[in-house]
Amino acid sequence: MLKNISSIKLIGILAGLVLIYLGFEYFGGKSRSKSFKEELVSMDTAKVSKVIIDAKGENLELIKENNAWKVSIGSGQYAEAQKSSVKSTLNSLLSVKPSRIAAKDPKKWKEYQVDSTGTRVQVFEGDKSTLDLVVGRFGFDQQAMQQQQMMGGGRGQQQFYSYVRLQNEDEVYVADNFMGMSINADPSSYRNRKLLSLTTDSISTIQYNYPGDSSFILSKTNGKWSVFGNATDSAATVGYLNAIRYLNSSNFVDDVPDAALISPTVSMTIKQAGKADIEIKAYQHPIHKWIIHSSENSSSYFADEATVNKLFIGSEKLTNPRKE
Image (tube, helix red, strand yellow):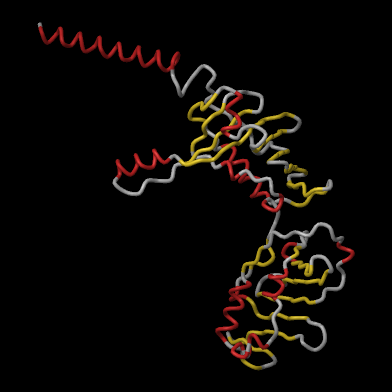
């Protein structure tokens, strides 16, 4: 009899706890409320036609035309954008998952940087606006990391979050594991920055074209490198090839017309087995000092004196590096 009474009491207590939980969840919950949105971002990335990013006075547009993306570079100009970079931005936005509401009062917007100091992102599918989001302050959840350390005994995984707000709504949300800084308004982060991508073992010759009689050819025969028939210093040659193997630049030149860049000051042609030749040209310029262009990225020019100096070396750097 006592056992049955205890069971009834236990069931009653459990039922009471469930009712309290439901009441807290739906009527008094701090993290969830009637205004809480489980989903803030919903889009079909294949149908996205335009993205507008406003960040601290910088305005950037990404536009898709004929399945190719273009990025605004100022003065009404657009340049080729990397599809992978645009995809990365869209995937980053899709990762926005709200965990709780941080504030409902517009007076709090400044604190969380979801006012004019935040980054506004607008996404369109055709003429339809799919998303209008303000990305605000970024932070780390130190408490969550400490709890992980206490439970696992090891180093806690880095927990981070960003504050976000839908443009036309008051609520400020916490989006866990969303790095708001990944939404970039810098055009160069979307453009093709490649100058060179080489497989050094496949290179057979590099021809350097210089003014006067300083031109030379670096060639490989039976695995041995030589200049003018003389063996090069193997360590110097390997070091040089490794240094130029992968070259990128973000110093785009968009204010000099192609017609003004006809005769290069120096140039080089790289021949690789089974691949098309790569031609690199460098032009001296009164404003940019040096402008460089690679056939691997035919639509872009760069102002990059350091890269010019790295690529265009004298033969003595390969044959007698100790004298340098």
